[in-house]
Amino acid sequence: MPTRGVLFGNRREAGQKLALALSGFASRSPLILALPRGGVPVAYEIALALDAALDLLLVRKVGAPGHEELGIGAVVDGDEPQLVLNEDLARMVGAGPDYIRAEVQRQTAELERRRQAYLGNREAHRINGRTVIVVDDGIATGGTMRAALRGARCSQPSRLVLAVPVAPRDAIESLRADCDEAVCLETPDPFHAVGAWYADFTQTNDDEVRTLLDQAGRNFATTHPEG
Image 1 (cartoon, rainbow, N blue to C red):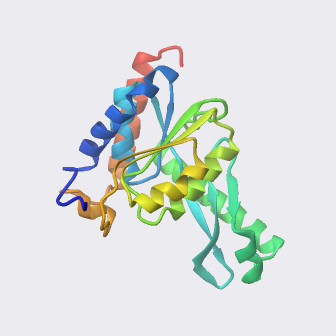
Image 2: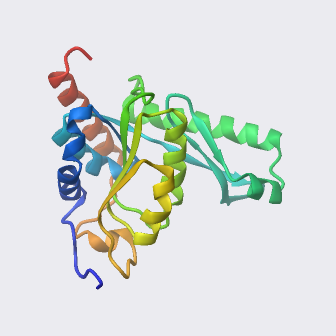
Image 3: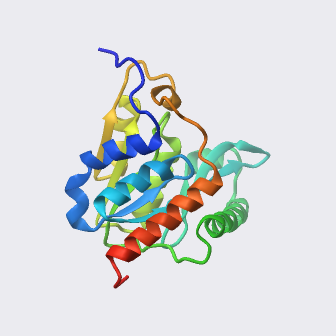
């Protein structure tokens, strides 16, 4: 039966509700990774409730030669930036090794620029061997999230969890192969768009991202003075 009406007041309310569903992970000292920008207010509330570290998981699309809007892969931030590539599509559009190498360098530089803009000189949190929860404000098609999960997996977390407030059921099911567990509060049908399920879906701006990351860092430092 279709779900009707607004499900969440705003992203932070969605994060508070999602945190309740993730409360069992609190004892594992998880790392919360937010997809910016919209995923940050959601992830902030989860990090606060679980007394967990918060960091970003940045993803940059690799476009086809001469058609940048056609994604043939993505570069994903992490312990080391990871390339997630659709090799069949890359061959089809003539994206050879030299082109891909140059694109990876360009997108890696942009990832670093964006990380600096949001987090300054703070080092990224280690993913290897940790329980990692990847968070966004919702999923439409799942393409960006799939790249994010596959990139994070390359850094060898002990457990990789996908967590979103809302998504189409088929998108969540298709992503289960890329994570150890998927937590999604609502799978309305028909879906329409992520923003349709929020009363306030105002775009998250860079200042809000920086403010929430700074506050999360201070919160975590207060409760974990050993680092």
